[in-house]
Image (cartoon, rainbow, N blue to C red; front, side, top):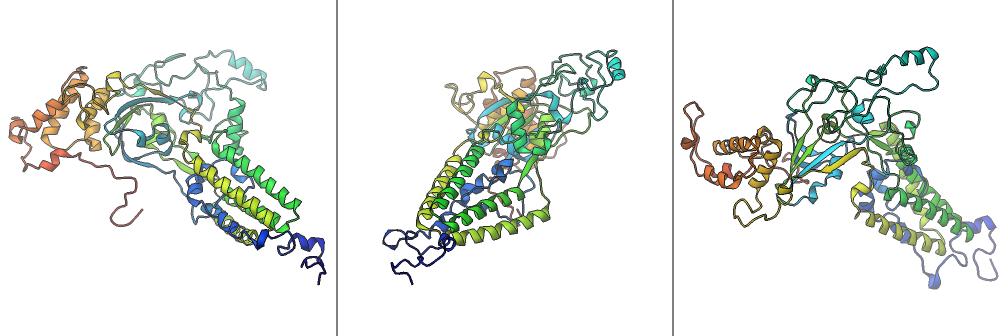
Length: 524
């Protein structure tokens, strides 16, 4: 027994490092912060919101403390990125989907569109060399043989031979209805919105882009392709990851100063657990690309939200497949079986570290508890930032080309009680006026399937093709809706008359389900 009353006086220096009942290990008046183990697992909702963003780069491998690391311990990994419920229709392709892709919703957040808003965006690839998975012919390097150099002099900049692993791209078309293969090829610059540069001229990557690509996928450093949409280098998630690493190192140094071996092991294990589960969930986004150069229509799409807003996106088929009609899949760096093994290892490390955190000394518990409180607050604040701060969307050039007369579709534009007041009919007319088509209206179910609406759509398309911007869409709709089926029948129309249904005239043919909608059978 110790003479001074210190229970650890007769213990070896190594034993005192792992003792929590010696003098100085407890707080004043016998206080303990065993609740620090609870602080380590609080904040799961804030961390889960950024789980996919955190594991989208190499920064997820850094050993560090993370609030609620159990948010990463899931039995399975998502195979696709989350989508937003909205009716998406290809104006010329005929594709109809009920969701909008993850990255497309970052470019134009649909939840920020006010009811009956109309907007037109033009989206194209910033660097056409990487558009759609096709590359223009590369210039010959200094390592090329002498015979190849002599042969290259016989070719001009417009007939440079293609690489044997590349597929030639079909020339663009001015008319969306005209197949691209019918457009004569152009030398140099074309009038396509994604005109490619002269073959042989490539854009050199900046240092920031190289570092950003390495963080997203280090295996790409020796290849010519870039990740489609990597996490931006200065993402708030990356900044917070670096801060967490420094904070973790400070905790370990602080614990070493106070000779708290339990805290050192506990923080080291929980940091190792974050690296293990981060590696198990490490992924990169894979966008759909065209593998052939068949003649295809233009890729323009129009999106209708549940609130009656319309968004027209003018783009090529390559952009449409990457952002809208294609699937955004997650490609992981480890297999499914390895994922389960790593999840089990991470769970064991987390459980052991939680036990050890409750047996740290007083000073260490104060530092660790304060660190988790600060990190929880930072992760919560990070949820307030727009998502475009986290992803590098520099691959796309986005321009707002909404006509001036349609920019205020969600508000009152004149004293006319019909044409000047916001309404679904007026916004639908704006969309038809820009697309000069109504077939997409029927395919997407944006208008009721009645003979009255069919007549209104026919008149709207005729007014759009003749550039009659002053056509009274709302007034004409009110007039047509008062007509009966017999009034609208023509001698050549053999359509059988059906009983009048007031509800069928008032609602779109296809409704958009809310984001939390679940089918009645209970399936996801």
